[in-house]
Length: 556
Image (cartoon, rainbow, N blue to C red; front, side, top):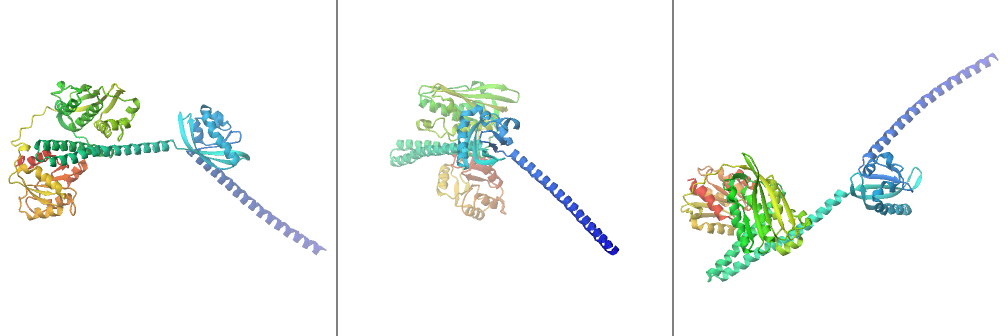
């Protein structure tokens, strides 16, 4: 009996030990589960916080409305759009939030009813008034039915602001339309002088036995060619301006001289239409300034050309310059060009300075023109640190004004008269190497300079020019005209090879670039290649003769 009791006690002891071990294990497991649960809760809290953070910074407007139209969820962008705090938005009726644009808003609210009824997602455009922006904004909105916190019939709206994108699209379409209209006008504007050039050339050929008629035809060809060149220069100017490659010069010039040159150009136009033209030059005889004389003249000639175009017979045009501010070192001048022509409406004035556009599309048909002149003028004024403005009334006339501040320059001494004028240039005994791949260009240049009695050696590309120079005795060539773009070897490479030749005249012979490009970077590239000067095509005879005088007569 005692043994049985002892065995029972042992079993009870073992059972207690086992129970204690199991309890300890359960406690450890419970602790592990508790830690795991807390970690999971913490992880979920972090995810919720992250989701809330993302939700709050999403730029799209997000909200959920219950079937009554009450806001049950909204993000910060939605609240900012309404210029309200979160507490003011949540729980509010949508009609209360959009009360300032209610009629417009209710149209879009009908779409939400359709979403609930059809249980399908839709995408629409909405234009709503924003108290924050104080203007209407355009949205691309997705509306979809959802069940939120047990509520059926709720609608989730996600709206993306596309106001800027749509404005950019409309601007692009407008620009494309304007450029298409411009190209159409340019086609007409280019064909007009081309027709005159081709037609008058044929007439001149038929009139060989009638020198007077032939000369008149050639004069017409020359005038049409000059007009065509002006068109091309305008296109190049606006291209350089838009690409940021345009640079204004700074050189001393006399204001009165510039005004007198402008008067001569514009007076003949006015006389053709019997328009009265007035300009003030008396007060500027002694005024010398630093600036871009060529571009200032271009601006004024553009403005005066417009005035002549839009002013009827017996009308009046004036150019006045006023000193508005003067110091010891600088002077501010206000230029104003006025006419009593057809004038403009405020709407026409709004797009007046846009490139490729005219004040009215019908103007091109009635008066011609490309619509580039004023855009170029405005950009030139801006580049010189000024601003241009316009005042106009329909059927009463127009006034353009701009001001420029220019540094004063010392009165210039007149350059001494050269012993030989470029027009009387005699280059007998001089030899020029002409590198140009287009035969007609070689013929034109040689014929234009035939009265100088200079001799030419022709080269069709840079390689032939290099070989010709290398084969000639040192000092045989006095100057090289080097076209830039030629096959086999271009003008840059040919110049660099010539400059590195081991002969006495390789480094000293003047090399003048011939190029259809007149950008500053093209001129700089030519000089960097070792050339001494640059002249643009089409050939300006006076400029070419001036170069020849400077390099072959003046420096000798």
